[in-house]
Image (cartoon, rainbow, N blue to C red; front, top):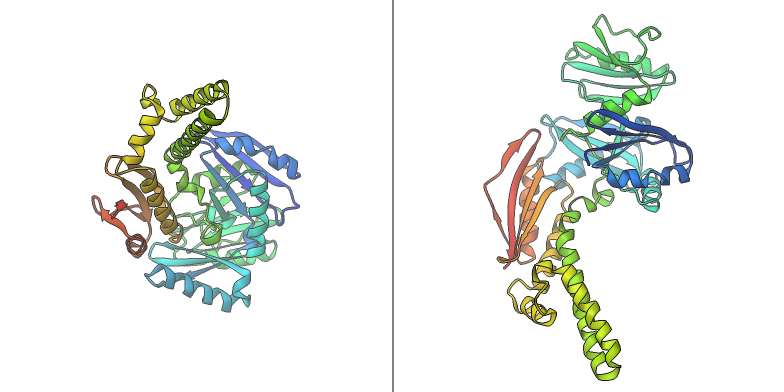
Length: 399
């Protein structure tokens, strides 16, 4: 499905969650979940959505720009942590720090771990798995010569000159006037009611692009969330591990079914010696059905013979499983690496992994981790630029 589910989260989990489900032609459905039961009722829609985005109120997220961030990802993260700790006067162990690179600069975000933990527990309990969690101001994304402002009766969301914020009015009005006064900003893109809003843009033209109602924001947020340079707070301990592991599910399922088939066969052997022929026959039928489900291409081969072939093969189950575990652990340690596609060549006992990343050092760090685990790693086709990210392919195999 190509649908996107946008969840406008409240200031705390006790507040209503406004949500919108969008497809290629616009908003499919939108409503407000006033309690946990109503939010849990979204799980079937979420399961079919291609992307699920949780949007935090910008007031809960601090943002700082780093003009010349370190190239090494670990040093970049460390520099961001110390910068935000000094600026916010908060203990590091109470903050979750997320970083990204944008047009040569670094951007660091800080949000309380308690906030992240509360939402993680809630969504985990109702079986909704976010692909992104992002502050609302990061979804405005104006052009480099524009500023963007969402005018709400109570609050304002503003982004201009590489900086952004959300705040209550009227304080927000004066902050926004200062932000859009940046000499790089030539035009203001506004969302709201032009008949009621009064804003001093310093003589710069204001282009009204839409309303500030939920449906308008859902469309804006869904469009910008799909961009590669949209920040995602789900990094480190909060990273969605299911993003790429799902690609392995066909092989994992086959491996589990194969193991279950072998268990069934062992059960048959025991039954032959200790139970009645009727029970043994029943277990035989179950094992055969399981074998045909797991290996349709070998449905007419005797399950025992097929199991022997698999286990005697160079690319047998144990090799696949150990290689999968090593690849899993290595990628989990590299937060900045995104897995786009993964394939397994059973004949060669080799994974082909298509990935994207923002820093070449991240790829080198991943290769080093795989090598340290005794995994053979080669690059296929080299690395090339795609928008704000690099893309490449690794071939990994047991050494």
